[in-house]
Each structure stands twice: as structure tokens, then as C-alpha cells.
Image (cartoon, rainbow, N blue to C red):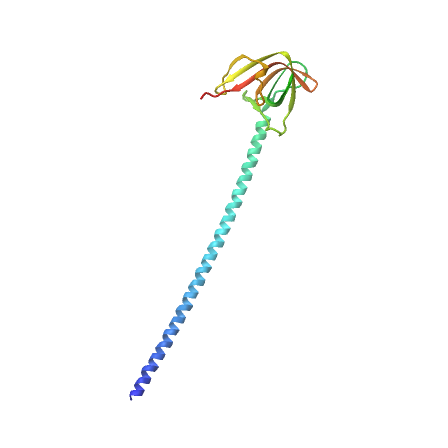
Length: 198
């Protein structure tokens, strides 16, 4: 009787153990299933985000290209509205430039292109050094007239008599004279100096 009772308790415990183990197995299977579902959802979301990012990038690229084309068209339109000064040919001409090199009796300038826009505004364009520069050799005589214009605001200036010794590399100059072949003979040289106060 005692043994049968023990066997019954043992049998119940074994059955309970199987039930618990079975339950754990189901729970494990459920949690595994939940993990798989979570991973699938996360992957779908990531793929969706990747697709959205690709679409956004394509849209940004298209917008940049459109803006670039519009900017180029505006530049072309602006260029077509300018009447550039012709400094070539015979007679007295005015040439502007930045001094690149100085020698005895001559110097070299990089031409500053000047012109007038359709709204009558003046425009001056200087290429960067080494980029499509028009280098001009300028000759002058000992009796060349030199003036110095000093500006503190870039808009207004005062003028005084100057000397050729005040000419420096990097100086902006306005020259009046005539062409002698490929060289420019300057009768007057106006040196512009920008001197900010302070």
C-alpha cells in the first residue's frame, strides 16, 4: 500500500515533469516564433527605410541637377546681357588689369574684362591666376603720368599724383594709351589702392 502510494506520487511527479517540460518547450517555440516574427518585421522595416532613402537620394540628385542647369542658364543669360568693352584696335584705348610682373620700363598685367550690362550697370571680371588669363606687356616712358587713387570703402576714392615706384605686383591699374603690336604703350597709369580704415 505504501509502495503503491509512492508509485502514484512518482507517476504524478513524472507526468507533471513532462507537462512542465512540454510547456517550456512550447514557450520556447513561441518565443522563438516571436523572435522570428520580430526579425522579419525589423528586416521589412529596414528594407522599407532603405527604399525610402534611395528614393530621397534620387530626388535630391534630380533637384541638384535641375538647380545646376538653371544656374548655368542664368549665367548664360547674364553673359548675353553684357556688352564687353573692346580694348583692341587703333587709337587711344583704356585697359584695366592686375600687375603680375614688373621690369625696367615695362610690366605685365592680367587683363580685367570690363563691360556694361543691359541695366547700365558696370561690370568687371578678372580670371583667376593661370585660368584663361590675357597677359599684356605694358611699356611706358620716363615721362609717363602716374596717379594714385585711394579708397577706404571700395566705392569712393581720392586721387593724387603718384610715381612709377608706387607700382607693385598685385596692384590694380587703369591704363590709357595705344597698342604697339602685341604690347600696350601706356601714356597714363592710374594705380588703385584699397586701404581700409582700422
